[in-house]
Length: 177
Image (tube, rainbow, N blue to C red; front, top):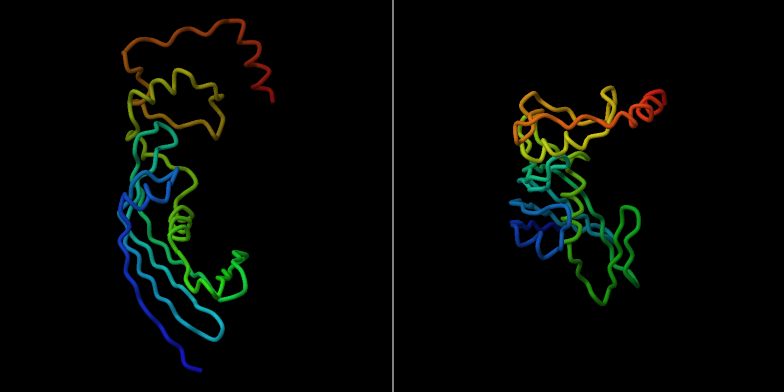
């Protein structure tokens, strides 16, 4: 059987993320190379996405630019009704087309790390001061945010307020667990 292939190139800008109503990604500048190969009974869509996106830092909420470089494959075939299960998408024969915008967004989102944090010392100093002031993690807690000496300074240069002594007994109980 004969195999056909087509190539497409897309540029995704900030407008793409606005139009798709992306909650996690604020901005982006990406290039998409899409190869569509027709084979027996199905189409194979090969995506190669490169560029960068802007997301909020999980620690200080300031913008954080993350690189994107991902390759993904989507298999599509024509059928009676739309179905999006496992690794195969079925498109109704009467439609005969597929909008790949949401798939592009998912591929980009899945290529990002779970934690979106700035490099040490790069977070918003004011927000880090507020975070440190309200932090309740124990010092030996592995999930506690790591602060540099620069970030440990409060924004107003003042001292922390002393802890109410009634809380010390509760902290001892938490430390024992």
